Image (cartoon, rainbow, N blue to C red):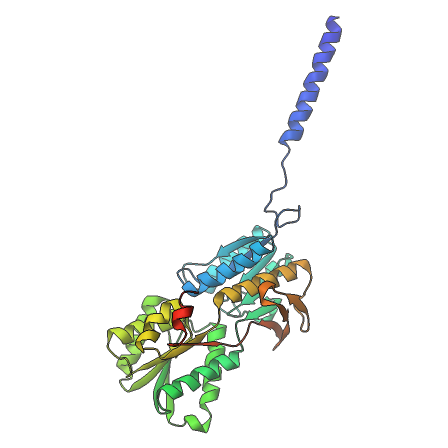
Length: 347
């Protein structure tokens, strides 16, 4: 009887240990890149923190990813440098995310890190400010670069009566989108009808408010006959609007460019900035989210001619973009005193 009890207790102990082992066995983490059936993880890296435009873009990306049932990872360095973005890319590679969407601070410097990500099976795309074609599978373009560049020269020419000195207040000197738009501005200026307009300077505020303010003040001091400033950056145009307002230069120095309606409403309503342009940054991020998902699912590979559904934005097609490919969001939209009250409540 004693042996029977001892045997029973031994079997009970073994069973208990086995149950304990099975209940304590490590479970696959939900954040393991979706390989275990958990949520797919999609990361977006913007240029830098403290940028309202970037915050809206990341908001749209997050909206799309959550609508698709995935997990969005939003990242941005304190300073708009390639080095800071490279560090973030390396971290995301180690985390084995499914996709990385990046707003490049430099078109070429990110290539080794992004290629490493793609070699690891991570789908890579750029948006807003492109990285080179070897660093991505596809690029999300907010609007036709030629139209963006040309329309700003057309606007400023109308504002100053086709005559006078103008300057450009850009973001960083390496920003692909800014540089492309500026090149199209220069091409538009080659038209003989602009023979009396002179582009005197392209300044860089690095998408930092204080530096953009300083650069605007420097332009006004260096070029006392300046008639207009074009700022194709939301941070820059808001900074320029404040400087022109504080210095009482409404009507003396005109302002246009690309800005957020919520930030520029007071300057448009006051007449400091007669009108400006932009697209919806939420939609840029939203489209990027759906493109990233399509890449992960294999619906698209990034080749020209491929199509996919982008939620509320409808069907989108990939088109050729030099050595790479891109997806266009749409044309730039004009904001003026007639519609700014409505749009400033939106974004």
